[in-house]
Image (cartoon, rainbow, N blue to C red; front, side, top):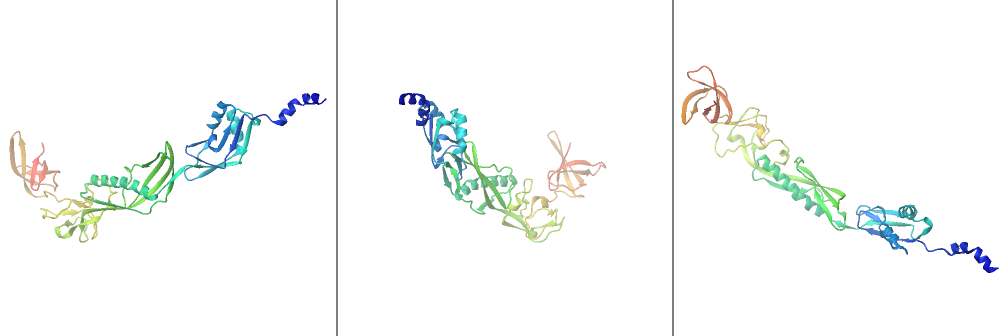
Length: 335
């Protein structure tokens, strides 16, 4: 009778005793990961009599890793359906044990804010020196002072890469911002702004008194001084600073194009160079014919600077001709 009962209840008795699971998953309370994707083998202890299934389970992706210094939670209830579907194992064949959720953190290290300043400062220094060379400013001295040191940041362990964003299109000024990007492999982790106070000291021409528009600028009207010209670097064009030197008195004074305040740095756009020839001057005109050069006296019909072409008239002619200004009182006939 007992044998018959066991025979009839055989399958039921086996289910009651329980068959070995195909996969055993014991979740851990916390885990530190080093890759951008979290896999099941990093958040749980796994075992299975099927070696191929065990390998697939260990490498099964279960989510993206959090950013360095942050954490995320992976819950068992949500993982169960994902693991069952991806591995193709019936839910009753997977035995879940351990905690109900795992706290995941990315393995990271702390990067001091001073290190970010040390990365950004040379890049900004080189950018400003390139701008200064383009402006034709000789012997300028650049000083950079961090406005504030960035807070320490957490970066991934391993081959973290730091890149200063290109500065070629950044407009110079008294305050400048440099971005430092942090990458882990091909993944952008974060961007850190570093701000600097900028000073650029150069030998400049300064107005000693207020100047009116069109006023002649004499030796006594200006002085040379080492001054911070960082606020002028954003102006377009080369030759930002006025090329005025009064070590020797000029043959003719320069003129102010605009009104200038006392103590203001004179820039090239504010100063009109002295005219090499003026209207009504009687000057020498040189005409070249092969190896022969002919000189004659002409009357200047319009003022001009060196390099400009002006109209002149010969003594025995009523029609003007064009001549290039070669220097004070010197013209060359234009063929």
